Image 1 (cartoon, rainbow, N blue to C red):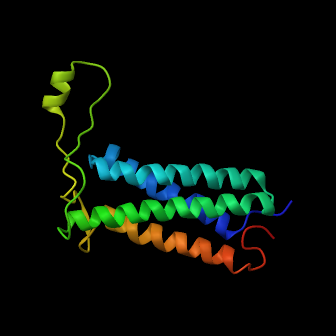
Image 2: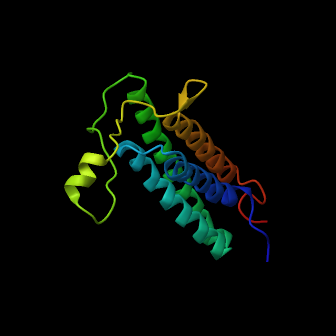
Length: 161
């Protein structure tokens, strides 16, 4: 059986790394997500499931549509990230109010009063002036385009040898 090729692995590893990084930021460094941050996570989760299914199937004819669908999910997350970055940079207004995470159980009023307020229009962390949403935009859109080009060129071994 042939080993999986780059397009399939990229469709799995890119959203896994980005979603993993977001969770590490949240639980390891206290970078609580706003509502738009959460919107970016769902397409990555869908992409992981689609790409993992394609890796398991190991049939080029059946896995190619799954890899393309994973790339589209990654692209959607990137576009949401681009919109969110624009809100953070003040280029346009967001669609949502501020959001917060509430732990399960316990007294709801205490949870509300002690919950950190997370604003969608303020970047909690930046590197070189680029927010996490901005990095999601750059990496997701770039990665999705790379996956789609690799599949579309029909290069021998793009998905499977």
